[in-house]
Amino acid sequence: MNAASIRAFVALSCALAVATCAPPAPQPCQRYDALSLNRENNFSSRVDWKSARMVNLAQEHVELAISAVRPMRGPLELVHVVGDTEADHWTVTVPDYNNAPVSLCLISPPGVVANCGASLQGVPLSPTGYWYLRTGENTVLEAGLSFFLCD
Image 1 (cartoon, helix red, strand yellow):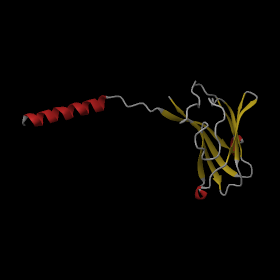
Image 2 (tube, helix red, strand yellow; image 1 turned 90 degrees about the horizontal axis):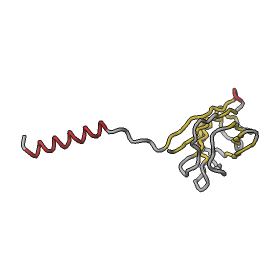
Image 3 (cartoon, helix red, strand yellow; image 1 turned 120 degrees about the vertical axis):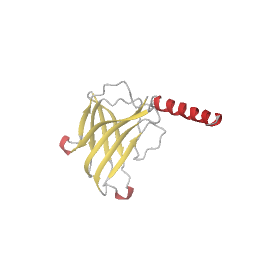
Image 4 (cartoon, one colour; image 1 turned 30 degrees about the vertical axis):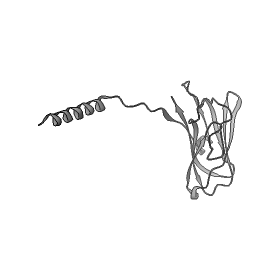
């Protein structure tokens, strides 16, 4: 081996050693699955949030995944109650998406495009509280509620 080959081998070896020993880069944002809303629980449930994290930043949002029989006959209503007070209320218009049985609605802070017509009015939003979904004339099979939060 000549000197150039040895230097290239040493450089490659060092790069591989550093790459394999370096800790993984932290993910700045994460989805927290919170609730399943369905007929069995009357499309309602409580979140006991133990974290100080809240929906507050532009990239953070509430995710409402909906499984429903198509076509949708009107909007849904997602309600958030804290204590005895209705803290938040959103009218969610689920897009058609070629009659796909599952839709994902993002409820984001003001200024962010809302794909289902609902945006957060007051931020920060704490996930803690009682959540329920009014399905109206729609045949909703199940809905999942998640919170997408960033560090």
